[in-house]
Length: 165
Image (cartoon, rainbow, N blue to C red; front, side, top):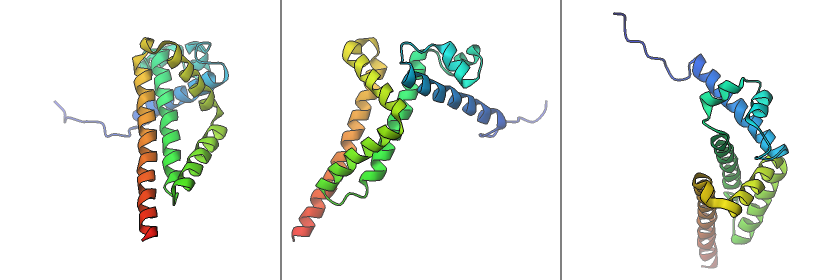
């Protein structure tokens, strides 16, 4: 028997798999944003990503799972952008202004996510019991959004107290 050879993380195969997964996510983001979640078909997404339809199922079990991944990526980017901007706020007024400007900037620069978020909101309003994973992801986003603001509001309160002394 030969030596036990294990693949190091970041092999060419792993990088290729991540590249294909990324192409599927980008294609889905574009298709969901342009055509709509329900109208977009897996075949169209794979064609846009320039991969075979069978390849899709190596990465995602269903269109719903792909949608969850796209939504998760979008919400993470939105929260990362918000966190980056609110860190510079010096008081509550600036925090509120910075928060809204950050959200506005993100949604203007990422209109496909804006369209997807609007569709998800509609899906959640119409039938949350049909997709509890989507509801949980959206709830987690709202909680994380609230935590970011609460941390900075508390920091702003501390700054105001120190400034008054």
